[in-house]
Image 1: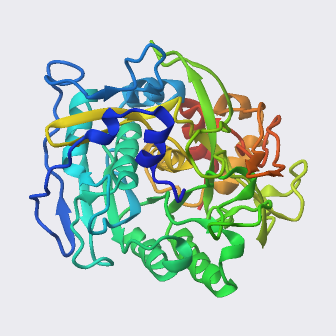
Image 2: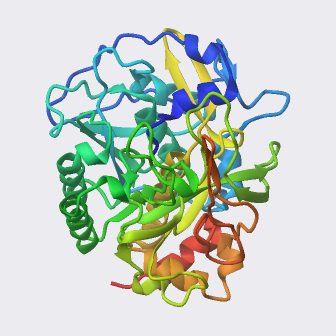
Length: 447
């Protein structure tokens, strides 16, 4: 849940002028006070890229920097389930997203983005509705990059799952929008069984105990109603999310990923075949990106606000605080899942990046698991840790054992944590091999 939004982050990372020249068309769709449906457009075209072709395409570079949805699903063991009809049908993923502000750059019509995404990658039409109750007057389909990127990623992983976006006022962070985030979490069970949170997270030290308690209560509300909440662990490595523009660099973790009721998702750099999607390997995401403020790497470490939960008891090196993250997914803009930005008759295909790309991946996976199980699995953390301790671990997860989340902040080095065998405070248990993990989740989650 970075302060750096996904497309701005990637435009610097890939250094593509074309990405910044896509013209945004005016929104002509209805402004909803409750829920409105997205356009049904999005059937496959005769060619994989559409008649006009993209202004930029990360898939066709000499050294591709992204994976198509099918390649990505193959790498993480999702495609065999998709082929068997486990596509998220009957499930709904809920996403609190910031509403666009007047004059904000990088805003597009999410209906155009998702229709083009469906066309390019031959996905079924997305079933998107937008709830504006918490942001009255907001244009429901005017989407900042984090919003439309989240929608596309969930749709890529669980193509037939419904998506419900809850728009919230465009506060800078959770510290300024506690009531809105909490209200969105409390609204979620009436909309769907899985929540993805990619925005607004902050260093634990930025919040008062009352603010933390407010969000924790909302997460407890969701847990009691069998809703899974996947949360990005942050993009600032061991430093966490800075509270101010000139922070004193120190180890920290990001809330609400640090809440034991959240499924915290860290970041990796994925290596898979650009021909078939076959998984090759993964390392911790920690790569300097020229032009970005501070450093970018998988958020992880140990909470100062929350004690170690029972499901983490006995882990090597766990200590007394809640360890972050629980699991991981690709977060590297040099290896990300592809997403589309469309507008003004043009479109581009870009790699998603940041742990904000990982939370919707895991939300999509949980939607698939809910369909497979025939019931909402809800709070899956204890089951994740049971599987991690079992003989099935290395079949259900890709154990990431290389890299760390040490970051350089100006002249200060914030020494992070190293990946290693089993769970670690950088990538958790690792990334999924869903064809094994999902049946195990269905078996291990009780009540």
